[in-house]
Image (cartoon, rainbow, N blue to C red; front, side, top):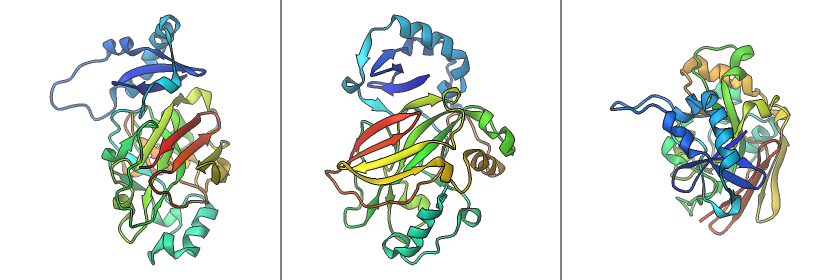
Length: 283
Protein backbone atom coordinates (compact mmCIF):
# COMPACT_ATOMS: atom_id res chain seq x y z
CA UNK A 1 0.00 0.00 0.00
CA UNK A 2 1.21 3.47 -0.94
CA UNK A 3 -0.16 6.29 1.18
CA UNK A 4 0.34 9.97 0.46
CA UNK A 5 -0.71 13.32 1.85
CA UNK A 6 -1.67 15.87 -0.76
CA UNK A 7 -3.13 19.32 -1.38
CA UNK A 8 -4.88 20.63 1.75
CA UNK A 9 -3.91 17.76 4.11
CA UNK A 10 -5.88 15.16 2.17
CA UNK A 11 -4.84 11.52 2.51
CA UNK A 12 -4.69 9.36 -0.58
CA UNK A 13 -3.99 5.83 -1.72
CA UNK A 14 -1.61 5.77 -4.68
CA UNK A 15 -2.39 3.22 -7.38
CA UNK A 16 -0.25 3.46 -10.47
CA UNK A 17 -0.12 7.07 -11.59
CA UNK A 18 -3.29 8.07 -9.73
CA UNK A 19 -4.30 9.13 -6.22
CA UNK A 20 -7.60 8.08 -4.64
CA UNK A 21 -8.82 10.30 -1.81
CA UNK A 22 -9.41 8.28 1.38
CA UNK A 23 -9.49 11.18 3.84
CA UNK A 24 -12.94 10.17 5.11
CA UNK A 25 -11.37 7.24 6.94
CA UNK A 26 -9.67 9.67 9.32
CA UNK A 27 -13.05 10.40 10.95
CA UNK A 28 -12.39 7.34 13.11
CA UNK A 29 -9.28 8.88 14.66
CA UNK A 30 -9.64 10.17 18.21
CA UNK A 31 -9.59 13.88 18.90
CA UNK A 32 -7.48 15.51 21.60
CA UNK A 33 -7.49 18.45 23.89
CA UNK A 34 -4.23 19.92 25.12
CA UNK A 35 -1.70 18.38 25.51
CA UNK A 36 -1.42 16.84 22.07
CA UNK A 37 -0.28 13.21 21.61
CA UNK A 38 3.38 12.25 21.56
CA UNK A 39 3.09 10.48 18.20
CA UNK A 40 1.60 10.82 14.72
CA UNK A 41 -2.05 9.68 15.05
CA UNK A 42 -2.44 8.43 11.48
CA UNK A 43 0.70 6.30 11.59
CA UNK A 44 -0.29 4.86 14.98
CA UNK A 45 -3.72 3.87 13.62
CA UNK A 46 -2.50 2.68 10.22
CA UNK A 47 -3.15 -1.06 10.70
CA UNK A 48 -6.77 -0.37 11.67
CA UNK A 49 -7.25 2.18 8.88
CA UNK A 50 -6.01 0.00 6.01
CA UNK A 51 -9.33 -1.79 5.27
CA UNK A 52 -11.18 1.54 5.15
CA UNK A 53 -8.49 3.01 2.90
CA UNK A 54 -8.90 0.15 0.44
CA UNK A 55 -12.70 0.38 0.43
CA UNK A 56 -12.75 4.14 -0.04
CA UNK A 57 -10.10 4.01 -2.77
CA UNK A 58 -12.24 1.57 -4.74
CA UNK A 59 -14.99 4.20 -4.85
CA UNK A 60 -13.00 7.43 -5.12
CA UNK A 61 -12.42 9.02 -8.53
CA UNK A 62 -8.77 8.87 -9.60
CA UNK A 63 -6.69 12.04 -9.51
CA UNK A 64 -3.59 12.24 -11.66
CA UNK A 65 -0.47 12.27 -9.50
CA UNK A 66 0.98 15.14 -11.50
CA UNK A 67 -2.10 17.25 -10.70
CA UNK A 68 -1.71 17.22 -6.90
CA UNK A 69 0.75 18.79 -4.47
CA UNK A 70 2.50 16.05 -2.53
CA UNK A 71 3.13 16.82 1.14
CA UNK A 72 5.32 14.87 3.53
CA UNK A 73 3.55 11.51 3.98
CA UNK A 74 4.06 11.86 7.74
CA UNK A 75 2.47 15.01 9.11
CA UNK A 76 3.68 15.04 12.70
CA UNK A 77 6.89 13.17 13.45
CA UNK A 78 8.07 13.86 16.98
CA UNK A 79 11.66 12.95 16.13
CA UNK A 80 13.78 12.91 12.99
CA UNK A 81 16.81 10.73 13.63
CA UNK A 82 19.65 10.39 11.15
CA UNK A 83 22.72 8.20 10.67
CA UNK A 84 25.96 9.90 9.61
CA UNK A 85 28.60 8.34 7.32
CA UNK A 86 26.81 4.98 7.11
CA UNK A 87 28.32 4.02 3.73
CA UNK A 88 32.05 3.31 3.60
CA UNK A 89 32.67 5.18 0.33
CA UNK A 90 30.86 8.26 1.63
CA UNK A 91 33.00 8.13 4.75
CA UNK A 92 36.08 7.99 2.51
CA UNK A 93 34.97 10.92 0.34
CA UNK A 94 34.13 13.02 3.41
CA UNK A 95 37.59 12.44 4.85
CA UNK A 96 39.29 13.25 1.53
CA UNK A 97 37.44 16.50 0.69
CA UNK A 98 38.00 19.50 2.95
CA UNK A 99 34.98 21.24 1.40
CA UNK A 100 32.94 18.46 3.05
CA UNK A 101 34.71 18.00 6.38
CA UNK A 102 35.87 21.65 6.94
CA UNK A 103 38.53 20.41 9.32
CA UNK A 104 36.03 18.68 11.59
CA UNK A 105 36.59 15.15 12.81
CA UNK A 106 34.63 12.71 10.60
CA UNK A 107 34.14 9.75 12.91
CA UNK A 108 32.86 6.36 11.69
CA UNK A 109 29.24 5.71 12.56
CA UNK A 110 29.98 3.41 15.50
CA UNK A 111 31.85 6.26 17.19
CA UNK A 112 29.76 9.17 15.91
CA UNK A 113 26.40 7.66 16.82
CA UNK A 114 23.15 9.15 15.52
CA UNK A 115 21.94 12.75 15.46
CA UNK A 116 18.63 14.62 15.45
CA UNK A 117 17.18 17.02 12.89
CA UNK A 118 14.56 19.67 13.62
CA UNK A 119 11.05 18.59 12.69
CA UNK A 120 10.49 22.13 11.35
CA UNK A 121 12.83 21.26 8.47
CA UNK A 122 10.39 18.71 7.00
CA UNK A 123 8.74 19.19 3.59
CA UNK A 124 7.17 16.99 0.91
CA UNK A 125 8.20 16.27 -2.66
CA UNK A 126 6.21 19.12 -4.22
CA UNK A 127 7.78 21.84 -2.10
CA UNK A 128 11.14 23.35 -3.06
CA UNK A 129 14.32 23.15 -1.05
CA UNK A 130 15.06 26.81 -0.31
CA UNK A 131 18.79 27.47 -0.04
CA UNK A 132 19.32 29.26 3.25
CA UNK A 133 23.01 30.16 2.84
CA UNK A 134 23.82 30.57 -0.88
CA UNK A 135 27.38 31.64 -0.08
CA UNK A 136 28.06 28.20 1.46
CA UNK A 137 28.17 24.75 -0.11
CA UNK A 138 24.74 23.11 0.11
CA UNK A 139 24.72 19.36 -0.68
CA UNK A 140 22.13 16.76 -1.56
CA UNK A 141 22.09 13.42 0.28
CA UNK A 142 19.63 10.71 -0.81
CA UNK A 143 18.62 8.27 1.94
CA UNK A 144 16.21 5.44 2.66
CA UNK A 145 13.90 6.49 5.50
CA UNK A 146 12.24 4.05 7.89
CA UNK A 147 8.99 5.29 9.42
CA UNK A 148 8.35 3.91 12.89
CA UNK A 149 4.90 2.39 13.34
CA UNK A 150 4.78 1.21 16.95
CA UNK A 151 6.43 2.27 20.19
CA UNK A 152 9.96 0.90 20.48
CA UNK A 153 12.29 1.20 23.46
CA UNK A 154 15.53 -0.76 23.82
CA UNK A 155 14.49 -3.27 21.14
CA UNK A 156 16.87 -5.83 19.70
CA UNK A 157 17.90 -5.83 16.05
CA UNK A 158 15.90 -9.05 15.64
CA UNK A 159 12.75 -7.24 16.76
CA UNK A 160 13.43 -3.89 15.12
CA UNK A 161 11.81 -4.25 11.71
CA UNK A 162 8.51 -5.32 13.28
CA UNK A 163 8.23 -1.73 14.55
CA UNK A 164 8.40 -0.21 11.04
CA UNK A 165 5.20 1.10 9.43
CA UNK A 166 6.80 1.77 6.06
CA UNK A 167 9.51 3.41 4.04
CA UNK A 168 10.00 6.59 2.03
CA UNK A 169 12.70 8.40 0.10
CA UNK A 170 14.53 11.09 2.02
CA UNK A 171 16.77 13.99 1.08
CA UNK A 172 19.00 15.06 3.94
CA UNK A 173 20.05 18.47 2.64
CA UNK A 174 23.22 19.81 4.23
CA UNK A 175 25.03 23.11 4.66
CA UNK A 176 28.75 22.33 4.80
CA UNK A 177 30.63 24.00 7.62
CA UNK A 178 32.03 23.60 11.11
CA UNK A 179 28.73 23.70 13.00
CA UNK A 180 27.16 20.61 14.54
CA UNK A 181 25.38 18.34 12.04
CA UNK A 182 22.03 18.89 13.69
CA UNK A 183 22.30 22.63 13.04
CA UNK A 184 23.60 22.47 9.46
CA UNK A 185 20.96 19.91 8.45
CA UNK A 186 17.96 21.51 10.13
CA UNK A 187 17.34 24.59 8.00
CA UNK A 188 13.73 25.03 6.89
CA UNK A 189 13.05 22.68 3.93
CA UNK A 190 16.31 20.72 4.41
CA UNK A 191 14.50 17.45 5.19
CA UNK A 192 12.51 16.14 2.22
CA UNK A 193 10.28 13.06 2.65
CA UNK A 194 8.28 11.44 -0.11
CA UNK A 195 6.76 10.95 -2.47
CA UNK A 196 4.61 8.66 -0.30
CA UNK A 197 4.84 6.00 2.39
CA UNK A 198 5.16 2.41 1.15
CA UNK A 199 3.97 0.02 3.83
CA UNK A 200 6.55 -2.39 5.22
CA UNK A 201 4.81 -5.49 3.85
CA UNK A 202 5.74 -4.33 0.33
CA UNK A 203 9.45 -4.09 1.21
CA UNK A 204 10.43 -7.36 2.91
CA UNK A 205 14.16 -6.54 2.76
CA UNK A 206 15.02 -2.84 3.16
CA UNK A 207 18.70 -3.76 2.87
CA UNK A 208 18.46 -4.69 -0.82
CA UNK A 209 17.16 -1.51 -2.48
CA UNK A 210 18.79 0.37 -5.35
CA UNK A 211 18.92 4.16 -5.09
CA UNK A 212 19.86 6.97 -7.45
CA UNK A 213 19.91 10.74 -7.31
CA UNK A 214 20.18 12.93 -10.40
CA UNK A 215 20.68 16.68 -10.61
CA UNK A 216 19.52 18.28 -13.86
CA UNK A 217 19.55 14.83 -15.47
CA UNK A 218 23.10 13.94 -14.36
CA UNK A 219 23.54 11.01 -11.98
CA UNK A 220 25.33 12.11 -8.83
CA UNK A 221 24.62 9.25 -6.41
CA UNK A 222 23.99 5.58 -7.25
CA UNK A 223 24.21 2.78 -4.71
CA UNK A 224 22.35 0.03 -2.89
CA UNK A 225 21.23 -0.24 0.71
CA UNK A 226 23.11 -3.55 0.83
CA UNK A 227 26.18 -1.32 1.24
CA UNK A 228 24.97 0.18 4.52
CA UNK A 229 27.62 -0.19 7.20
CA UNK A 230 24.89 -0.63 9.81
CA UNK A 231 21.63 -1.99 8.41
CA UNK A 232 18.15 -0.67 9.08
CA UNK A 233 17.41 -3.06 11.95
CA UNK A 234 20.69 -2.24 13.68
CA UNK A 235 20.02 1.50 13.37
CA UNK A 236 16.55 1.13 14.88
CA UNK A 237 17.94 -0.91 17.75
CA UNK A 238 20.65 1.66 18.43
CA UNK A 239 18.23 4.58 18.23
CA UNK A 240 15.78 2.86 20.57
CA UNK A 241 18.58 2.33 23.10
CA UNK A 242 18.72 6.11 23.57
CA UNK A 243 15.21 7.29 22.64
CA UNK A 244 11.77 5.76 22.90
CA UNK A 245 10.68 5.64 19.28
CA UNK A 246 7.05 6.56 18.65
CA UNK A 247 4.69 6.10 15.68
CA UNK A 248 5.63 8.59 13.00
CA UNK A 249 9.25 9.03 14.06
CA UNK A 250 11.58 9.10 11.05
CA UNK A 251 14.93 7.35 10.76
CA UNK A 252 17.19 8.54 7.92
CA UNK A 253 19.60 5.65 7.35
CA UNK A 254 22.56 7.46 5.74
CA UNK A 255 23.70 8.54 2.30
CA UNK A 256 26.11 6.88 -0.13
CA UNK A 257 29.03 8.49 -1.92
CA UNK A 258 28.54 11.18 -4.57
CA UNK A 259 27.28 14.04 -2.43
CA UNK A 260 27.72 17.35 -4.25
CA UNK A 261 26.39 20.90 -4.17
CA UNK A 262 23.14 22.22 -5.56
CA UNK A 263 22.11 25.81 -6.25
CA UNK A 264 18.87 27.64 -6.90
CA UNK A 265 17.35 26.51 -10.19
CA UNK A 266 18.57 22.91 -9.96
CA UNK A 267 16.16 19.99 -10.23
CA UNK A 268 16.84 16.89 -8.14
CA UNK A 269 15.30 13.53 -9.00
CA UNK A 270 15.54 10.82 -6.34
CA UNK A 271 14.64 7.16 -6.86
CA UNK A 272 14.65 4.11 -4.60
CA UNK A 273 13.50 0.73 -5.93
CA UNK A 274 10.31 -0.54 -4.36
CA UNK A 275 9.27 2.97 -3.39
CA UNK A 276 9.28 5.15 -6.52
CA UNK A 277 10.79 8.47 -7.46
CA UNK A 278 10.28 12.14 -6.73
CA UNK A 279 11.37 15.37 -8.35
CA UNK A 280 12.33 18.22 -6.04
CA UNK A 281 13.20 21.77 -7.08
CA UNK A 282 15.91 23.91 -5.51
CA UNK A 283 15.19 27.61 -5.10
